[in-house]
Length: 205
Image 1 (spheres, rainbow, N blue to C red):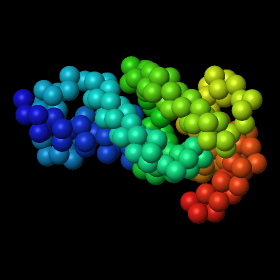
Image 2 (image 1 turned 90 degrees about the horizontal axis):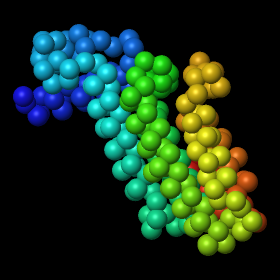
Image 3 (image 1 turned 180 degrees about the vertical axis):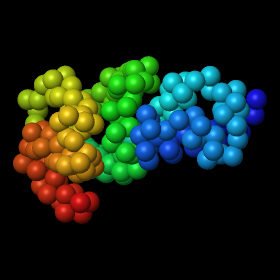
């Protein structure tokens, strides 16, 4: 089997799923877009669920790379880091049809579980590290319970993708994420941090 063709199938599937959602795209659709037979697709991916799982792995890696570029020395301080991550992830999800997340949860639980594992380990750690950094830098309040607020922030991120809470016909996902980030930051910062929020909000929004 050609590794190059397998990669092309994965990238085309990812593109179509992000644009149209997962349920509405068939293996036939992907084969036609690539100009190959459906049999060829199945030689590389035994079923659609396996393709979706690999697509999720691909997007987790992309998410990881985006966040890593924003964290630590790449950002001037914890508040800047929070804004940078929010803006970068927001740009990523602009290309996603919101129904894709609904399809993942309902029809592809194995792939969705991989995302849940990623957020409960990597994403939670990054949030906690940001709060620690903000306290050490003197921009976040010292009386914060990091464990509680880190988990609350994680639930906020999940809420952004909740089809029932924020229907995509009424809300733009990146705008929801932006608003929730402002709300979260206002609960973290002290007076010094508040000045930074005002500064970065005017320069990044």
